Image (cartoon, rainbow, N blue to C red; front, side, top):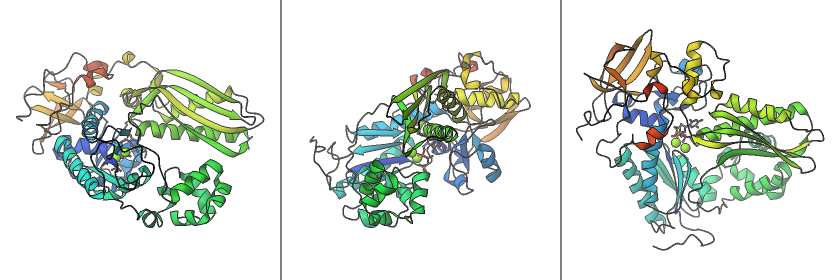
Length: 484
Ligand code: TTP
Ligand code: MG
Ligand code: MG
């Protein structure tokens, strides 16, 4: 196997970007036959709950990630609303990652459902044709092993590979032939480029720049004048499709942070506060997209004289709640002297854990208690005693002594409704039980593809925080439900 990755500028489209389609929702559909082809929304319950993702069927109603759950329910009242099962999504993600690692030692995961792969470094591809073959085979392997679809982009750079996979969505493959990059990028909105968020987008729009072609025409000097040196320079390079960032293997994120440098120092204390809130929200979005939560909130402030301060606060439990991160960052800001002006602000979260279910349980708890103001994230999970109904989270698996494996379709008023079906069965029947029915127990998820090499609910699951009322109630095995 030869390592070509040292070669300066790549000419073959051998960087692959994979992004799974509607990831959490697709896992739920693969898991629950009755939901296939239906609108499915996965997200947090409770007053501050937001949509994690929506199936493409639900997107047709306008539902999308980060939308308040209440708004989603108004748009798509008949969709299935499910609570995320992060440990299960991670186990599926690991199945996908091991397929990527078989292609190359250079695999750079970006989130639970997304990664770059340097095919050339693994000897898996060397030109457009071999790259396309590798991409087609990868998609087929992912489907065989997980039952899910992922979209693949192939290009000679990371930026274009990611743009390509976005174009390929859902369930497709797009290869950008070298030499066609600029023609392809030209008509795209500037927002398609990495690093162009809403603020930059607005700034460019005010300058009459809407498309990537217009960005390239504006020229480097103009962009530097508009956006500052670093950003202007970087954006100009991307507008010309120049991106030589290498694929970096195993970048274990120790923290997730975002920062902004201001061309003009900010003096107004209120404005500084607003910027910090905005950064906190952005930081949380990244955290969530990476399937992480963290305990330590960090605020970074570079002052007019380039002196840089960091302040941090560690919470009792991990969080990915925007309100908690915002409040903590605001508290930290209160302890910093910003008179004289601020050049840079940053907000980060460290002490990372995989997504804990804690926040969601807390949200569900405060919803039940009718107390949206409580700060559940700062209480240890073990202290919360659950009423019987909270064992039955919508979408989570159960086993009934007589009817076998199923999932919770809903609960309330002392009843729980269960649909009895498994990934390999036809759509199943619904039955209703009392919440304290002794024949009904929480269960581990079943593999999405019954014969797959990997059993999703293994030690990984037990390592993650569990709701207190589940421990010690493990169903001995999932052997009965799937004949293989
Ligand atoms: P994405 O890849 O951004 O979205 P997606 O896979 O659901 O849909 P598609 O890629 O087809 O457009 O995110 C991957 C998963 O991360 C998503 O399924 C749920 C989670 N997520 C959140 O929890 N919150 C968010 O705001 C986003 C964007 C994603
Ligand atoms: Mg995705
Ligand atoms: Mg993604």
